[in-house]
Image (spheres, rainbow, N blue to C red):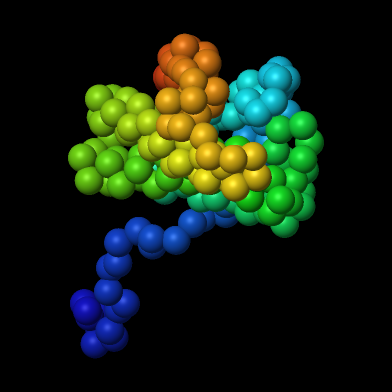
Length: 197
């Protein structure tokens, strides 16, 4: 502590690690953006999940908010859906969606956010770090979601091979998700050049 005229002053501390009011507002706002992106969907024949803009929403959220705030925004989105708020594709919600055959891909978004946060915090806010985190996070989401799909779908309909599951649930989405990633990077760069978030 320092003293002035014999009176002790409070020590100078670093920036608190919690969230500011602005942070909380941004987390909530981007959780709502994720819901809107989920509602933008193109139906696909069963057992495939629908084509949505969810991954685009995840990419933009992490790019604009950063790892920590982005992670909590994604977590908020998933928790809102878990308690029944219709934020998932097709205006659905509830734990039944998460525990369904494609729920692992939604839960996988949390893993994407966690990986982005860890890499950004460890290696810094460099473009190659963020790009690696997004690509790695998407791969992690694919892996977790596909294993989840195989277990749940196999339980209800009989065992399914990894190759079949990948052909159903991953391969059709590779090119669209790469396009969403590129679009998200472009939009995020344009926004960050004009607005400090």
